[in-house]
Image (cartoon, rainbow over all chains, first blue to last red; front, side):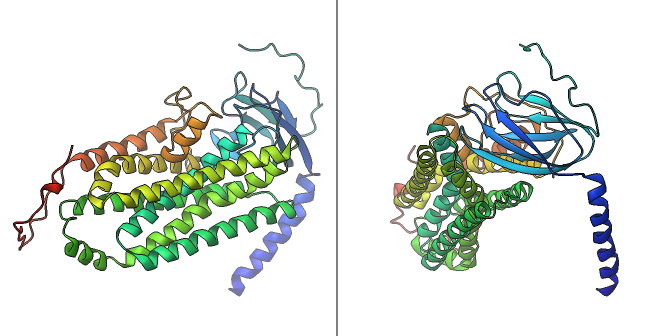
Length: 130
Length: 287
């Protein structure tokens, strides 16, 4: 037991030191589910991200997932119109996919996690894909 | 109000259905003690989940979704095993069920299974209960018309409980042999749906990540947000967009099991069959 304890304490201490360096501060992203589905492309910085998911009156969408390479990184379900629930993820830099099952035109959306990127990437006008 | 009603109904049904089946089965076999334990377990699970849901809200904590999905997967698989065992048990005994003494002997033989079934009901409520409690709290906390939204969600759960009770009542009323014939195929569909759902939650739990390409589009059948979808998804685990893996396990379970259930049960011709002359014709397949 004691032999296990030392590396455990060391690991926890290391994590504690590493955390503030990598994840600067808590970020919160408001996600609004619409009848179309997911929100327009999102961009966040690596680290701890809280997704505040709300539903603006979409009867056909009630779920929000964050995927990477076919794996579900995090999700929240049963967000009926008027409801709000949040979940927090530790995200590394990379390209993620948001998935809002049932959405009319944007069942899948983009989520980019990148360090120190100018905030206006390509969130300008996107033609409404049919 | 309707959207939260539909979600409450679906979440509630998934638990109420299993409890109803277990209750009817225990009652049929006169497992009074296990029956009482089952209710204690169910009420205990409800209390636990209510406390958990309110506690999470008061502490502004989030439901650990991944652990929730892992729990749902494990309990789902246990439920599949349990229902399969029930189907096999009833099928095996269908030919001799009129013989009360024989039935009682069988019951005594596997009395221990009553406790296991009671525990299963507890797990089934725990499986969906926490998620449902969190949902109910969120509904009463809605940004727009919280009273109406919350009432809708609560009504949905309530209707699910009533349906579960109806399944129990109906299951008790008809005798076991008919229970088997009428519900055999239905039970197979329930278990197959649970199996597909377990694969679905296993994906959401991060345990299973292959065969995730959409196989079918069943949106026409289970249109999201409709009462019909709540019934079909809650009872038979039918997803609007099932993926290849889910369809595959559904077929692998449902096809052989349906054949098994529809195949007439062979009367057990053990050493002394002693077919008494008063053997009633009521056992003949009525249809």
